[in-house]
Length: 130
Image 1 (cartoon, helix red, strand yellow):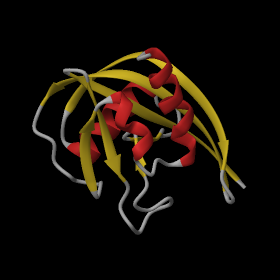
Image 2 (cartoon, helix red, strand yellow):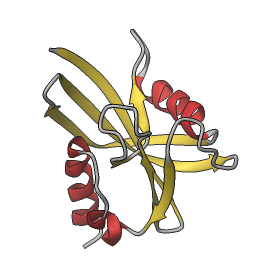
Image 3 (cartoon, one colour):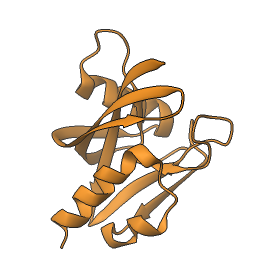
Image 4 (cartoon, one colour):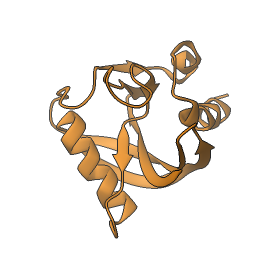
């Protein structure tokens, strides 16, 4: 079983949070998630997250504090997910490596078919917005 360190961006703008839908031919295909991805060897997590968001969505973000750290085991892999609060800075969203995107209110997050590893981040956001 492989172990991966991945990052996730909780991108906030005007009270809304950006969700991305995974492409159908990927692990957890068509599930919704906070966009991000795997770190390259030796890469700083904040720099890696900004790189992934640029590659997947074509936008610039400012990476802030860690919101949640998640340890999750899937059938074939274990991931450590670093969820960061982020601010949308520049660009127009392009679906370069995602199926779809949605800006949602925190209260709407539970109505999406979110990838299992992302649920602790959803729960944390809901607790912060009570």
